[in-house]
Length: 182
Image (cartoon, rainbow, N blue to C red):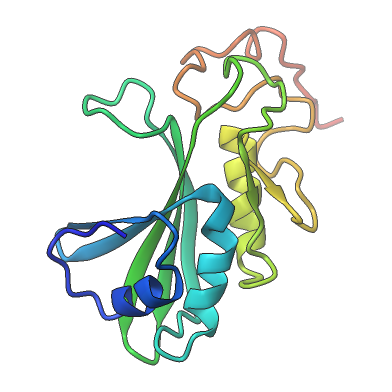
C-alpha cells in the first residue's frame, strides 16, 4: 500500500490484512481514499465491515465516475466509489475501484472489463445505488439480486452519464412516443 502522509485509523488494519495487495491511499481535505484493485474490492469491503478495528457498518453512498476528458491524467476511465461510515469510531472512509473498458464505450455492448462483485450481501442498501451505476455508466455488478435499469426505460440504447454520450441524445427525443391521459 502506497500512502501519502495520512493517519487514518483504519489504514494500519488494512495494511496488516492485505499487505500483499497493491493499494494506494490519497487524502484530500482531510478525507481519506483507499484505491483498491477490482479483484480485491469485495474482500476489502467485507474486511472493513467485519473487522472490529474498522467496523464500517454503514454504506453511505456508492457512485460512478467517468474520467473521459478529465484534465489530469487518470489511471482508468471509470471508477466506482464507496463511501463508508463507522458509527463505533465516528470515522469515514472512501474506497475507490478503477475500471478500464476493453471495448468501445459509445454503444450498449456488454464490456467484460466493466464488472465488479456486488456488495448487496454486505450492505443491502447498495441495491439501488448499484442499479443506478449500472443504468447510467454500464458497470455491471456480479451477484446483484435484481440488476436492471432504474432510471431509464428497459430498452434505452446507451448509458447516458458516460461522457462520450451526446448531450442531445441519439434520437430519443425525436422518436419519443407521447402517452396521452386517455
